[in-house]
Length: 350
Ligand code: NAD
Image (cartoon, rainbow, N blue to C red; front, side, top):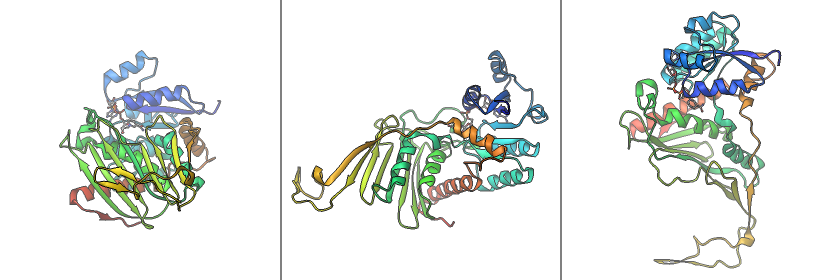
């Protein structure tokens, strides 16, 4: 494509590597090169045929550069983003976009001042498990969600890099929470009224290695997010309780299963025998009263993220990951840290 945007990736580590590979397949961006603060990473890029700029200033003073993707540890996002915007570059910043809402406010102000696009890489908006839950809600078939639980469980602790260090913006709220919160806030559009969060420190005292977060909305509906890095049996990826049924996705690789309640009243309930006696309340439903079905995985193409950014640069589309959404997610994370610190729920004012 003739008008591909020229991209430079700042930070050639794990995720910077992903952005460079992705750009090689892209129909909208053309990789000009990378810059990494470490010489060995620049040498590695060159050995792969990728131009390595010698400094950030060299990147920012190159008039050929249209777009910068910032993929460095979290505590360095703000400085590089603001510098790049003020140098007249459009900027994608990796998640979490900033470490505080105040920092994000400064970054948004720089974007407004420069007139350049500034967004963040919430690439998990393209995850098919999330999209399936979103579609189930949108279809209205099982009614309004009363509670959605979004979980990811691993068993290896947190990575042994800067993610274990507070000064670099480590911990699981900032690493994974940012994705899962962003996803759920795409589903629930109501006002948030309360946040309650407890962090875990099983493998790490410096930062959270997991957490339990409850977001309560104005209507009483709840979004629950759990990240665990010490779970040898994983709980389902998604569980949703809605007005007229339930939905579950047991694992990222699985399709969603939905049980839709057709008739509330049952002619006969066969009790279940438990050790302490019989229960009808907790007995499975008679299958004639429910519809049970699987939902096909939605189509998704993560290249649409860069396509949208490039269209936004050309003024042809509104950017998908908006400043107000970035700010809302960050404020929820701040409230989560505050709730954990106080050991009690905190009010959330929108
Ligand atoms: P990493 O440690 O693998 O790589 C970071 C790289 O940045 C390193 O090579 C380091 O030398 C370089 N660097 C550090 N400071 C720099 C600076 N000031 N200027 C230039 N280079 C610098 O880390 P990572 O896993 O690639 O994470 C980078 C960012 O990407 C983080 O913000 C992380 O949260 C994010 N990330 C996002 C996803 C996603 O799915 N969206 C996945 C993984 C990581």
